[in-house]
Length: 280
Ligand code: SAM
Image (cartoon, rainbow, N blue to C red; front, side):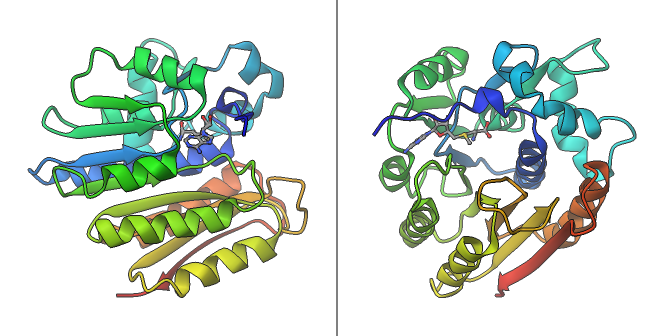
């Protein structure tokens, strides 16, 4: 199967802001404790993006994303926007945008370990080139779900797994839930962050049901909807699943996503919904 999705067209869009701000909060929590961590990013992309590149300018999605949140930002965006600022010294409007690998690399410490998987051959090569000089990072050109099985449990046995697939195939929700179940069996104490699109509600409802019946506990879902979730052809919102969420992440995300909803100019049906899908 060919990999067609190219994240460069979507870098910095509203869904990236939601995902990357949440990822940065979780990394910030993990590094607060003086113990090394391992981070696995199963669908890593190329690492960093140029918002003035042809791809990003072609869609202009970043204008309705990152550019909407940099003035008078919400306090919970601090770890995320700190990385954006560090990548763009002297520029009030960012040109370079961090993908998940860049956030991970910049929000971890010398003793931490980082595993990045990417299936697209060119993207995997760019990713490897971007982090060649960092001895903490290993890049595998491999299916992310296979990497998940191969690399868990990680060493050290504390850390984070990000699963951020492109949703190009119709059964991605099933693959995502299955991937999480397998991974959780190997590494039950890890924090997992999963991203998913919200177009229309039925596939999301089925995914939540699947997760609720998985036997996994402490499952948080956090969604930001900008438009009614009734159009299977349109990205109307997005959600994150966080397994083993840090203490009070739910309250922080509820406040942050409500703020993002307003900044992104959501329609009347826009809403932020954070809930414990499965408690302790
Ligand atoms: N996580 C990245 C970030 O936040 O910057 C963005 C990832 S993008 C949504 C999804 C990526 O998955 C694309 O770069 C695509 O080439 C890659 N991909 C597609 N199928 C894959 C697979 N089976 N395993 C690993 N990567 C895959």
